[in-house]
Image (tube, rainbow, N blue to C red; front, side, top):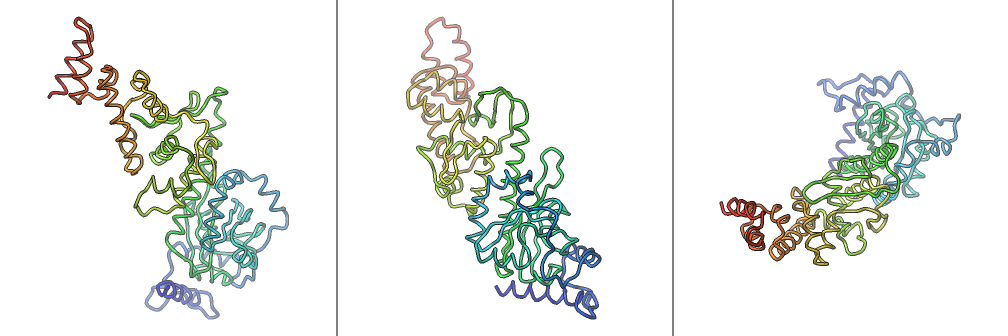
Length: 404
């Protein structure tokens, strides 16, 4: 808190030097304790509005509810609305969505913070572009097309010097142009570096919904299920369309596919990260991203996977049922070998041990090909061949390679 107070005092002093009556600009030593992007925004704001605003102007020409219903941002924000509300209410923030014209369309948060925000028209209909209220995080994120934060007196308008704001842009998946921003705002004493990371994670989850909706416009055969490969590769298919699958997404699909029943957010978070210092909100945002990729196939609140075919789920079932030929068909390699998730690593070891046991008892050459340097597996496969079997030569070659 002492550091925040000191930072706020420096920002207030710099603002007074620039904007108070008779203000003379930077301090005599040439330093004004203002970031370059804020200083540049201040200079633009001087020509657009006044520092003495009592509240943001309101767009009187449009009903914000109508704008929100028609907004391309609405489905994406609604997909992650539970996570946004939970963070805002638990941490004392008010969340807001602003369109590319600088109008707030949607807000969420606890009653106290929302009422406080409404006193300055930080509510649907309020205009928070730089030309209307001067320097603020929403305007910077929109104008610079990157995440932004503005603390206390870094704001141009004195009415929001008691606030801190963190914002991240959202983009049209087809054109790449900014569609608007997602913002988290609170009182200055709640400023924390993790707030910017949180709004970026939430924006990424919402962006994933926008991207998935754009991909869904690509024609695909009707009645096809999502197919996820995580054994010996990493891939998501729907019909003939291949969608990139990031490692974290593959880990989430894997753990949900192998779970006996649904998982709470906390349970999935522990399985993914163990003792690593990763925020629960990051896991929730990652799940939202996966949900959008899979067309809503991950349930909310408690997580479960439905309508998705996974090779690892079918392999687990084949091992349980003792279907050696199905195991040989499904096992294309270890489960996500690049993953360091503790639960994924445990499943990888369990599956490898079980598949090796099937290879030893069945002698299937298909499995022996997947374990080229396991001498015992190669010997078991060779021993299963009858004299004169044409596969004997290849079996001997595998034995020689495995034996060094």
